[in-house]
Image (cartoon, rainbow, N blue to C red; front, side, top):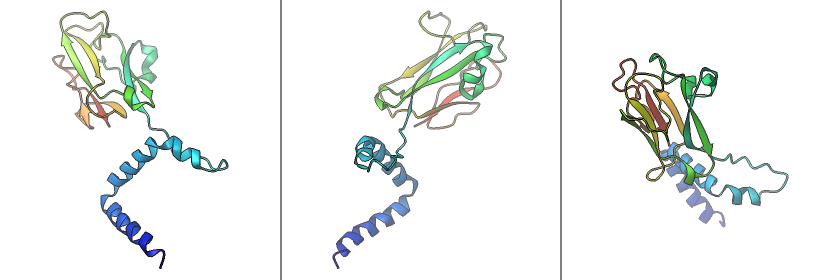
Length: 173
């Protein structure tokens, strides 16, 4: 009889969790990550804490040169087919959600910016610069390149006004 007050709320929660499925899993995983250190500290020393840290995208570096091929997102030269430098986007990661990127955009201009890396270096046409946004929105967990807009967000076409394939930087939260 003493278990009835405990069993009823658990049964109700289980029924709701069953209906919510993945959403509840994500909520519980987020709570576990927020309180990871406290959860792991109360476990006996012989137990291994398996709460893996969540990491986020802290930024993307633009790197040039054929020898960087394996380092870039999807291993893809974003300047391929345009007779410019081999150009790759390489992600930097962080465990701190406050340092994570919230979104990206592309700036197209006729003017060079000596403080930024041109995505179209050595190719004819507009200069293309990647902008990372850190203020509004949720922290980004993964980024990838795609010929179609996908994921939770994406930039404009990196190849805008160049001809050739569409190419988007996409991300998921």
